Amino acid sequence: MPYFIEFIDVEKSFGEMKVLDGISFGVEQGETFAILGPSGAGKTVTLTLAVGLLKPDAGRIIVDGQDITEMSERELANIRRKVQLVFQSGALFDSLTVWENVAFPLSDSGHTDADIDSKVEEYLKLVEIEDLAGLMPSELSTGMKRAVAIARALAAQPKAILYDEPTTMVDPLMSQTINKLIRKMQRQLGLTQMVVTHDIANCAEKVADHVALLDKGKFVFIGTIAELYADDHPVVKEFVEEDRIRFQKEKELA
Ligand SMILES: Nc1ncnc2c1ncn2[C@@H]1O[C@H](COP(=O)(O)OP(=O)(O)OP(=O)(O)O)[C@@H](O)[C@H]1O
Ligand SMILES: [Mg+2]
Picture 1: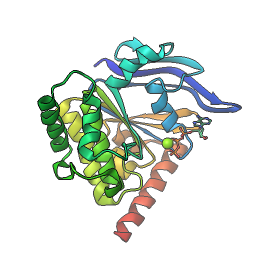
Picture 2 (picture 1 turned 120 degrees about the vertical axis):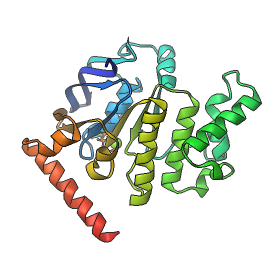
Picture 3 (picture 1 turned 180 degrees about the horizontal axis):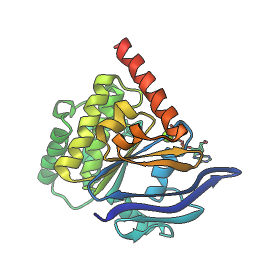
Picture 4 (picture 1 turned 120 degrees about the horizontal axis):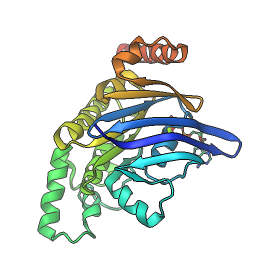
């Protein structure tokens, strides 16, 4: 399988602080790739680089066969339509209804009203929130906002969706719902996906074909979940163990 997104020796610093110290990975067409790491590891920075919202200091970033490293904003607009970023907050338009939020990406692309109606209905159905169409974002839970953000991402008819911490700050039941949606986008629509998360048991394990663990600007692991759990690297073992303890505590509280 060819890579849909590829990072080659990517470096990124902010002032004196080197956040990414030469990372390389490839996301195969049609797979879900998770990047794990503690807070501040550079997960969000990595997603932001993948759509050209930040430029790397060194290295190359290839998306859908095109080197985006030196692309102009105009060229990047096309990449950002193909590769949709779903933020933690959902980043919805607060003054628009759920329906209008999802319709937004369709509004300036020459679709007829009837066409927009049927597409919005289709995407709301796909993410299983048809009944929320008339609500305002302020009336939605964090998890529901994320579902709407996924529907809005679909309306851009992307080839890939990148999720920033999709299961953070939602209850275990909502985490399950979101994980199922992420899987459904891959299986049903064949989308290529990236998920960044600090959560193995509640997220990466449920959605990812491959995972990578970011530590001090470098990957200490890239492989499958089964390989992650069996890995001997001390940083990997500690991260896995902390996740296991957190998961256990959450289960006891639930
Ligand atoms: N635009 C920026 N300017 C300066 N520093 C930044 C910028 N964006 C990120 N950073 C810094 O880079 C580091 C990595 O940030 P990043 O947001 O990628 O972490 P993260 O892994 O997503 O963490 P979290 O799990 O808390 O979301 C942090 O120390 C952050 O403060
Ligand atoms: Mg982040």
